[in-house]
Length: 161
Image (cartoon, rainbow, N blue to C red; front, side):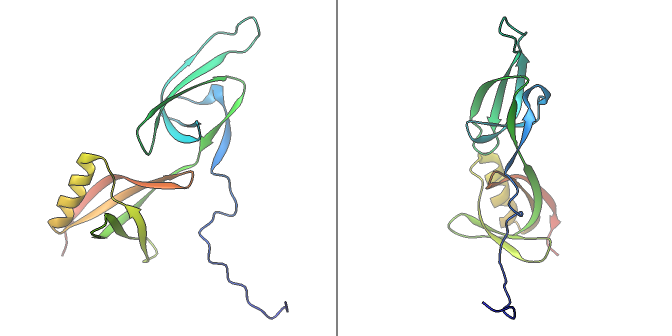
């Protein structure tokens, strides 16, 4: 290996950053995010018990998985750290829907993103298909966390010119 060789690494990685970050259980609130059973969840209910004779207050979390909608629960001592996922939302313009259920999206840099399937939730799926069939300009919001991505919202920005 000589110094004159060029090395090009094609990577969409985020410099080895973790998919989660530690957060003290007592600081997580309703509508925040938490990892329960290795799934990213939105917290819908938090209750804290008083300190018992062994000295730890406990937090009881009820969360809804942000990708499949399942309800998960966890109980953690409030002084302990638990994992919170990095959740990102990104808007893309919808270009095309393929017959096998994948969407083609326009990124901000002008490239395309073709690795996402249509959402399985019924009202959103119908809105996207109908809006696309009518030739409207649609912006979809993609939520990503812990290496998973899914279309979670839709905006209509008017008819195509």
